[in-house]
Image (cartoon, rainbow over all chains, first blue to last red; front, top):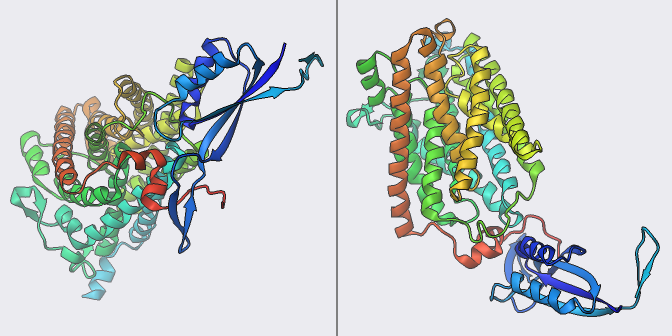
Length: 111
Length: 417
């Protein structure tokens, strides 16, 4: 059993839909982090105490899921389908190999 | 002349009304926080600003001609006041019921200011500030000032109901003038401006519940000035208004909390504070006219009724985002009717339905119905005009990025980077 990690950066307002869709497909385990980032979206300028500041890091949400490699494409497809709006800023998914994993409660090792 | 005035001046009442004025102005801040905490984080500055801008805008309008339209002598058949008090002319030397003219005018100013703030609920997270400025100016002039004149300024409604039924419309501190008008106007605004992008698709939870609770607590505190101050004297009526206010808030808070506990399985703090505001709204027209036991009933019913109104508007898919209609509109409507039911002659001489005062009850119903219809109709017209001239809704990109950045160029909680 080979484990992979998916890191999906998505729009924050899409989190509930993505979570529900994954849940319905049987994937419950995940970690969610609030992040800021940029990709194709243009930055925004704002005034702060008299000087102009460029804000180009917009709030996003990153979902991390560690799953068996046979499930990875299915999970990615679900995320892409539910998180997509078609406009710049929809996000990215990265898939990374996982060397080893432990369950803290029991001490068991996987992969 | 000044000696005579000094002798006639009610010093204790003046002190109390001056303090109440400050308390009512403070409520606009509370309202800003209450609403601000309920919206998403990217719009919190804008939401608070709408209430702040309302204060500044209405205050200047009030000085220029708002006070005169509301409290001047009858003009246009009692539809509005005349222009005798333009620029608050003469009020520096005049007494109004024992109070310095300026004190009375300033106290009323605070009411006009918060009324505009209340209706911003229907515009939440999607209004253009420029549109709101023009809309607000027109609304306070064409809705608030006339209705205030009819109910408090001796306008046509007052005379007509007195002649028709022998009963004047009772509104101790603004259930009709403030809450019915703003609540029902918010509903019209929400329907005209349309739902927020993504409403119904993704969740739009309050971003800061403690802020909502602080705002609610400030409103509760300020309401003592709003209601008890409306006695315009430091006397028994002020005291009964204060205790009625507090009991109604407490009853409303628990009622809504328990009702939502039964419905959802968990008593939310938002339900508690919304119930408190509902109780406060409902007691507003009745505060100086009913006995304390009645204020508990009024608050309790308000808590339950406004909760149902909220559920109804959610079911209908109406994005009247922060429920000014459900709480202020329906709460104010219930309060106006409740005044006609529970007015106790032993408190202030007015007789409600349960004491045999059918005419007073009827007067309240008519007063409320007219206020609802007028506010909704005129709001519709003003919105259409302003939308055509300036535009009321922010652009889609602005709404997506957030109004704090798009309209104010500010971030509420910046990282510094």
